[in-house]
Length: 317
View 1: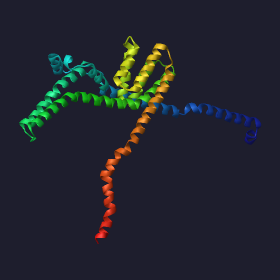
View 2: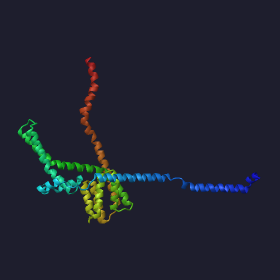
View 3: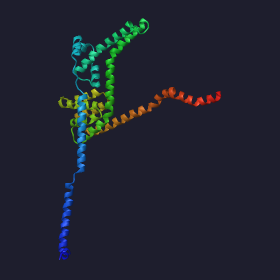
């Protein structure tokens, strides 16, 4: 009886239908029951990226200060001797901006050290040469060394600013083509120029803190300055690179005449990359002349000794 039931076509059809329904339900519900590993991995990547951005923002906030508060004693000395009238110049203010020092505090500190450094070095040279009498030279030679120390004290703050500005320019020069590429992507995606630079200033902080600072400051100036052209010109003056000046000029023309920004940014980005490659090739081409003197002084004598010594030994024998 049981065998007949199992061999009944209707029973077999019911069993096969149930198996088919169960398999269909399993096939439909299996993707819903299994975890989405791709979504989990993408979420982990997104969380890690946000954590990296947060760390870079914290590092940027800790290391970069847009304004420097003046010290009380420096401010008192500067105001008492009216150093801003005698030692302050427009070139010095521009050099301070290019070196990354802004505000009244930076200018006060520069004027203070511009007054103090010649006095300190002059007194030190007088004490070293005339009191301790370390150098046994004539009076004219020692006076010349004192004058030289005074001149170095006058030029020391300017040399410090020049060195600082060149370091900042070299860092910006390396990161500027990448920043232009990011800006081009943002602009072509439909973002406004102001929002694009704000986004780029956040993304480029991992590569160049200096450029991120300058772009963030330009974005802030675009928000509150009545003339947007002034914000672009301030960026060009603070960095002092021809590539940055070309981009700011293109942005000013786009603001005035309504020309497309994307095509100009694409051309300028390629020019910046070509310029960076040309500088690298120039440095590589300058290596052989620079290595000539060390090779003559250090390699060739050792090479001659290694080659001629066995022959000299055989000849003497």
